Length: 452
Ligand code: ADP
Ligand code: MG
Image 1 (cartoon, rainbow, N blue to C red):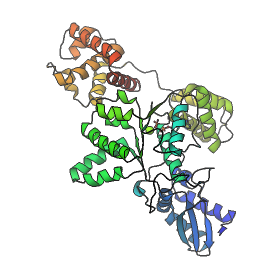
Image 2: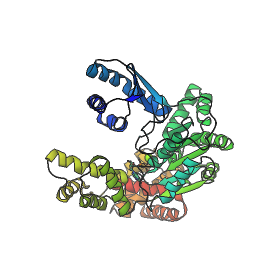
Image 3: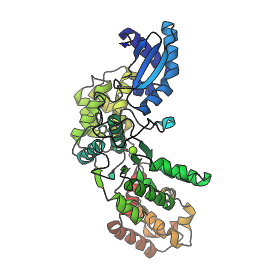
Image 4: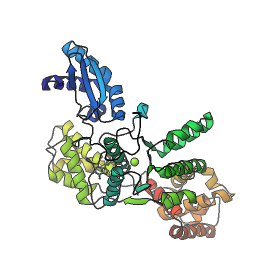
């Protein structure tokens, strides 16, 4: 087996680069291996069946065209699972010490919709005090699924690395055991799939799809909030998998007990394994993440530029990465060096403008949309019981975020007098200390209103 010469490979890669979207090329081709088996066959190794099918789907045609146009040959391109596969960065595939479950046939799943981001691996995850527990638990689960932490429940704010960790577990499990049935899906997919299956009367196949997994990973499980039927269905899925000794891994943007209207039985299942919180990263962790990202693509970015970005973008790693890309992009467009002066200029421009004060009617719209109600329900003279808490939350937010007086607020909420308004505010203030669900709603709404 001879690798293609470096020159041949470089030619093929630049051909692919012109043919594919930049994002696809970056994700799938930067570490692509090609081996000439003989004159008529070229092998593309892949680390597991998922990658193999995905690579084939993306690259078969472009590779065939490349050989034909560049070298006037039409070798057969063979996509194969093999140890030379490059997909998981530096660490070569290792044989599993103990497979998750004996599997007789290689059975790729979800090939139509390969769900993993190639760079969401443990190698690319920077550990720090904010995520140490979650990271350690994730590594432990990937090394010994269904033994220690089951379910593993990772929670934390938006953009802090939950999806990255979940997918890193999937990658690592598949590297150890390429035939493990690892099913990763967003909770939204689960809910939509369930609704679809109900309509089409395909519940059996919906169920067996999830219940056959060795490892079931459901991202953003807080999406189950308020969805009674889906919760019930997930409860049964959970129990079936648990009984069968399979691993479950869940993520949420809030602790399980704060997910709104989550059935008690499901809550206790979620809490029966290991819960790990990811917090906002420290300055040092933010800087290390930026350094890692910069080194992968733009090695010459000075440390003070990264330090500045890490200082101004504090709470969300996705935004942190976005800020770096913006700075680099701006430097390229304006043909200037990526220095501190430029970074300051760019990030000053992209800082949110001083927010204008929010109005009562904007709050009503946001709250109504959030709880799936009509704005008119909040404004109507008749206060129905079913909207009473939604209305109280809305009044509370108006009181805290606008300068409207109690009387003015009364007029916005069906002409109620100021004592009714005050009662609503007090009621929510009390609930904030007692009811995690209400607290989470108020926090999310406040965040959303602050972001307009
Ligand atoms: P979440 O699912 O919590 O909203 P993501 O997992 O999508 O967040 O992370 C957002 C971005 O930040 C991704 O590009 C991810 O790779 C990156 N990221 C988050 N945490 C880390 C980390 N500790 N090290 C490196 N990159 C990280
Ligand atoms: Mg996510």
